[in-house]
Image (cartoon, rainbow, N blue to C red; front, side, top):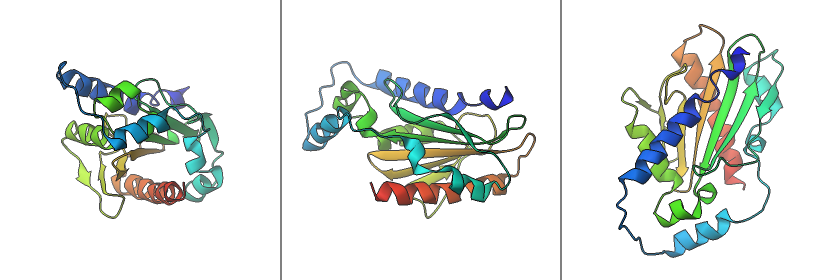
Length: 202
C-alpha cells in the first residue's frame, strides 16, 4: 500500500516540534491567564462537531486532478491527542503517489495545559518554520506562508498561518518520481485559497 507510506511524515514532524517547544519552557513558568486564553480554553472543550475534510470537497480536488478517483482515507473529525492536529488525507491513486493531505492546527484543539502555557497555532507554525532551512516564502496567503519543497522530507508542502489561532499545511503528491516544484506549489496554493475562503465563513 504505497499510498499510506508517506502519510505520517508531516504529523510526526509537527509532534516533534511541539514536544521540543514544551521541553524548552521553564518548569517554573506560570503565565498569567488572559481573556484570550480563557476564551480558547472554553472553545477547546466544546463538543461542537467539526471535520477539517469539510474544508475541501472531492469535487474541488477533481478540478486539480482530472480523471482521478478521490477517496478520503483519513478524516479530520477528531484532533490528535496533545498536538491537536486535524489530518485529512485524500488518496487519488492506489498504485501511485498521487494524494492531497491537509493538516489543520487550531489553538482550540490544543490541550488546556498547552493553552495555559501560552501555546497557540501561531507559535506551532513559527516553530515548524524554524526547523526548515531551505524554505521559500509565499506571498498572498494568510498572514504568512512558506513552502518546504515536495517529497517525503520533514516540512515538505505549503504552510499557511491564517491568524494566531489557526494555521494549516497542504501537501500534494503528483505521482511517483514527479518532483516538479512549480507544479506542486501551484496546486498547493490553489487548494490553500479554497481552505482560507471556507475558514473565513466559519
